Image 1: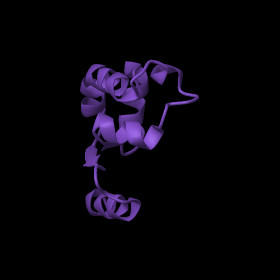
Image 2 (image 1 turned 30 degrees about the vertical axis):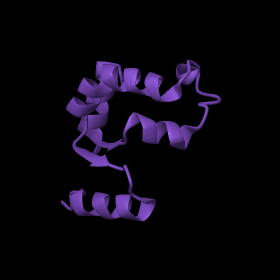
Image 3 (image 1 turned 90 degrees about the horizontal axis):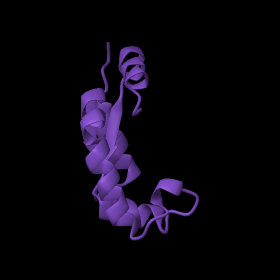
Length: 88
């Protein structure tokens, strides 16, 4: 995703959805970040905030849709995706 040619290919060949959540919400979902080298630094929420700040422009430019997942269960996220998904 961070390589321009990858982002361009994704956008040109499919629908790109950016599922967002606040860093503290993501940190709660990930726990200690075990097995994720980019999250080896503590606290995880701070590192996620740094990564998101660096990646936000690429994600925003690549995504066709952005769906906030904070406070939503999977069923609610799917309902939002169904509402946004192109039918043609």
